[in-house]
Length: 117
Image (cartoon, rainbow, N blue to C red; front, top):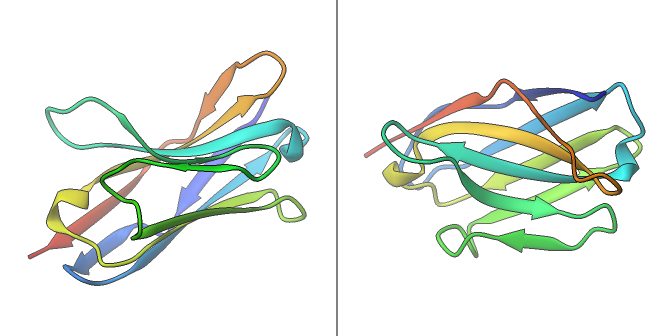
C-alpha cells in the first residue's frame, strides 16, 4: 500500500511557475512508476507527465517544453516543475504511483492549480 500526499498547488498568474511535490510512504518508492495527472471541471482526467522507476519520462504534448517531472528516490518524492503556466493549465493535479510488477495504481488526493490571466 502506498500513501501519496501532494503539495505545492496554488494561484499563479499566467507566465508564472509552480513546483508540485508528491511524497510517498508505505512501500518501496523505487518499485513504482510515478505520474502526474490533472482534471478540470467537465473534462476527463488526463496524463500530464510520467517518470518510470528507471527514470524515463513522458509528457503530454500540451505541456512539453514547459513542464519537467523528476523523482528523488532517497526522499520518496516526485516533483512537477511547471513553467510558463497558462490559464488552461488550471486543474486539480493528482499524483499517482503504479507498481511496476502488478500495474496497480494508487492516487493522491489532488492539489489545486489555478492560473489567472
